[in-house]
Image (tube, rainbow, N blue to C red; front, side, top):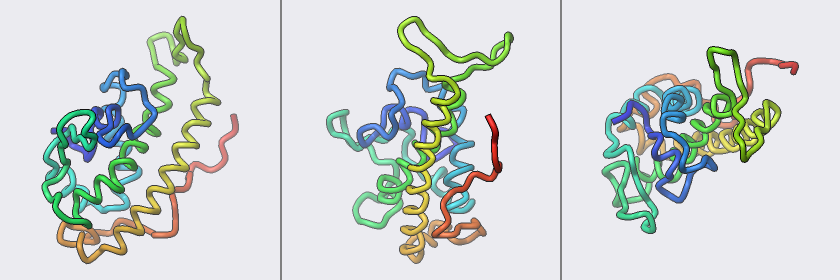
Length: 191
């Protein structure tokens, strides 16, 4: 199993319907290399190191499926019988947040490639690359969704803190401020 909550398959194929607008035929390797960085940047800081480790170590699969039209239901975690469980937390809050985070992290590398001839914009015969402006626009739209989902996750975890402390939530400092969404800390960037 991969050393993250979500896998590239789950980002691309999506076990609910599809978690992102990424094309299903995209190479999973293009996405997989960004998963750990995305979760570190956008998820781990909210749930904390101990709870994050629990979530990674206790998942049942790297290819969950919640859509009966795509085959048998495959749960990510074992506790599927009640509300306010780790499975519910994953399906309702973490799945979409993790998928959006990976998409956000991977976007610049999907549109631009580093080659031995320099940095190149991807271009094909039957499509036109949107360029850096298009990548930045899409990243900002995805970041807005990530911020909203982070705030929702923080609120839910604090409301259900008594349930999730048994899994490690709140056992370490995670610098989580419920009302403060992600903010760009790079300052002003001129293009």
